Length: 204
Ligand SMILES: [Zn+2]
Ligand SMILES: [Zn+2]
Ligand SMILES: [Zn+2]
Image (tube, rainbow, N blue to C red):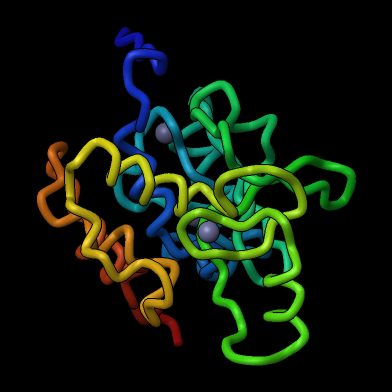
């Protein structure tokens, strides 16, 4: 049994995988089953492919593992604070109460640019994300885990942060792109591109 102590690792090696994974696609292994959307992520498998899997995959392959469920709010991925606070340092990340559960966003959300109601509101807010400038409700530093990770990488000096974060059209996935020389050998870009393999069913 390998005991992983989170306290010794400020940024767990699976975090970039979690943030760069596309959830809510239909499971390639269970194409005809009703609950086959891939909205689960296994902390014990640490994002080993496929990082996103469905209800049935969980029962088959991750029954005794620590699995977190990804949820959606207005088409953006969120996780419940209660499911990640013990394994992740979420200090400084804005949390929201949605459906009576406290959640936080995985990634930066694209914002309308130029003049407009939303932009005006953002300018008026006393609190803004330090990375993407999104207006925050409360005095937090970041809008999402993704923006916090960008800051963490900057402060640890690794990945040199490419400088294009604020106002960059690449938006939410730039932290994956910036991860070029990742020390743990993960390849967020490659893994992201791969997604779910297409396989035509024989009986179609
Ligand atoms: Zn499945
Ligand atoms: Zn697992
Ligand atoms: Zn942000």
